[in-house]
Each structure stands twice: as C-alpha cells, then as structure tokens.
Amino acid sequence: MKFKPAVLAIAAFIATSIACGAHAQTTVAEWDFNGVYDASAGGYQGTTKHDLSQNGASIAFLSGTTNLTTQFVTSTGSSDDITNGKALNTATYAAQGTQSGVYGVQFGVDTTGYENIVFSFDQRNSATASAWTELLYTVDGENWLDAATFQMTKQGSFVNGLSFDFSSILGVANNESFAVRLVSIFAPGTTSYAGTTSTYGTGGTIRYDMVSFFGTEIVAEVPVPAVPEPGSLALMLAGLGAVGLMARRRRAE
Image 1 (tube, one colour):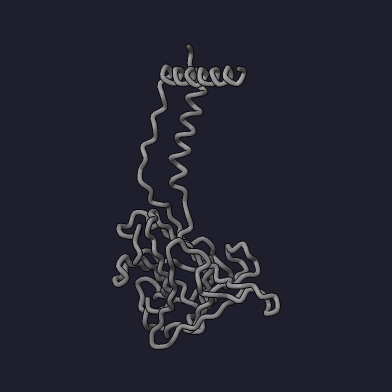
Image 2 (tube, helix red, strand yellow):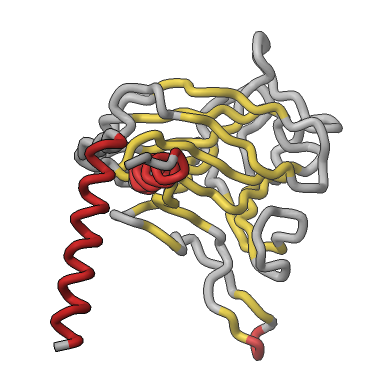
C-alpha cells in the first residue's frame, strides 16, 4: 500500500501546531488607566489600578524632596483602543541638577508561571520635561539594576510601543518580586537635566499609558509524538478502516 505524502504533511502540521500553541504570548499585567465609565461625570474617570493581571500587580510613585504629583488626562494619541480614555500624567519633578533617577513610577508584577517577559509602554513628554528616562528593574524587591534608557525627542504627542525584552535576564521569569521603575534622569554624561524640546523645568510633565507586561506560560515539556513511518501509518489507517467496516455491519444487522 502506497502512503501519500500529503498525510504525512498534515500529521506534521498538527504536531507543530500543538507544540506552538503551548507557548503563545500572554498579557501578564496591564494598566490602561481608564477606570470606570460615567457618562454623567464626563466619561472615563481614570484609575491607577491595573485593568488586567494574571497573578497580581502594583503601582507606586517615587518622589524626592518634593512630592511627585499625578492626575488623569486624555490618552489621545496613545495605543489604547479606547480613544476617549485616560492616561497617567506625572509632574513636579526634581530641581535642575538634583536627584537624578529618583522621581518616577514603579510597576510591580508577579511573573509566577511565566517566562520571556517583555515590558512595553507609551510615553508623552511636555517640552520642559527631562528628555531622558531610565528603566530600572529588580528581581528581589530591594536591589535595582539598569535595563535601558529612553530619549524623548518630541513633545506634545505620544511615542507608542517603547519596550524592553527581559527574556534573557536571569531571575525575571517566574518571580513574585519582579518590578520595574521609569525614572527621570540627567542627560547621559552630564550632571543636569536636558529638556525634551526646551529648557528643563520642574513643571514639565510626563504622561504614561498602556503599561504592559507580556510573557509565555511556563509549561512542562511534553514530547511531541514522532510522525509515524509510512508503513506504520498505513497499518493504523487500515485498522481504523476495519473498525469502521465492522461498525457498519453491526448497524446493518
């Protein structure tokens, strides 16, 4: 009995699809800052509570000698599908030449059960906000390490999809203590802040939206059955055919 290559191809495709499906990317946590919708109060009310979390998530605001101030403002221009939603606006940053890396926002995410973590966010600066933002992370909740720096070169509009891939960083996956910080810093190699498109000022604002953590679920590796040899598969198909024939005969009786 000749075995058709198409059957082998279908079997291989099914096996591959099963293996790939187990590693699909999942949103581990997300903040869209929209909150509840209240038409009588003008629409979305804004919130710092995450709108999605697999295990648990938290947010905190980081301040120095003065308190960082926050409010909810329009998210127009961000990647949020809700076009009339809210974004988190931060203001009252450090005085020029002081406290680099102190003021900002912290997001904690329990990544238990997930790996290949990717962090993504949208950011909008005003003209006088610091052009430079540093991304820090911790895997123990105490010690903070530098991951990346982002430079904003335009003001008044969102830059969407800023991201960092933590997949290769030891300790980030499957960790209830993982957290990141986005903090305002001096221009690299200097001891002063550089404004986004104008002279730096403490009244400059930084707006965040669609803060997201993605990952893939950690699953036990299940061996994918080998595609049967043509002869073996032919025997199996023949056996199935015989079973079907017997069933039809019984129904006929």
